[in-house]
Length: 202
Ligand SMILES: [Cu+2]
Image (cartoon, rainbow, N blue to C red; front, side, top):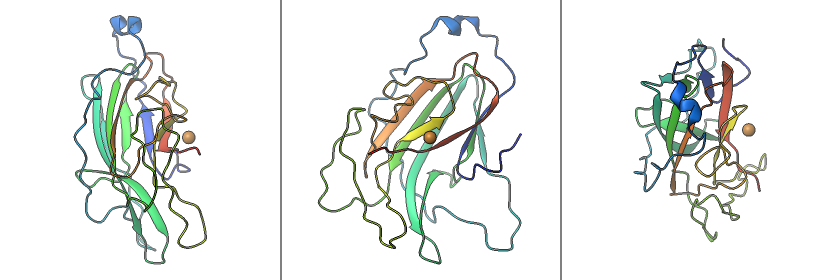
């Protein structure tokens, strides 16, 4: 079950339904373990790309254990050999945008630090799920507008829209800031391949 149209990052919800009935009575909202997360340091050589003519390899993967998947991402940018600006999520071990394997009812704890350069002269707000001010980097190549703030959209999943959940319209993680997502995938989440990606709306 591999979606070749999703080139960035994926969440694979397993086909095995966990027998964890008590979880059904718990709220699906964010948990309270997100305070003061430790920043994720930038990693060297971010956002690698396959060389032209090389054989494409399977993307890296991380799997939950005992109902929890803990992930730490450094959000970084680089410029490729032809001048294109690339952005990506990197783990501290150097994995680029791994596929996240979870089961229905699992908890995802995902810490992300925005290690992209901070634009000069911009007003910064903390990532408190109420921000209305994002950073903006003018396009250097005239091809596309690229903001340096980010959040993560857990595209297609039916998870909490609260702060520290899939709160895409009210979460901004500006340059230098660290934010933690904590939420459960519903116990009745349909198996499938989903997409996570930066999703700033402004
Ligand atoms: Cu999306």
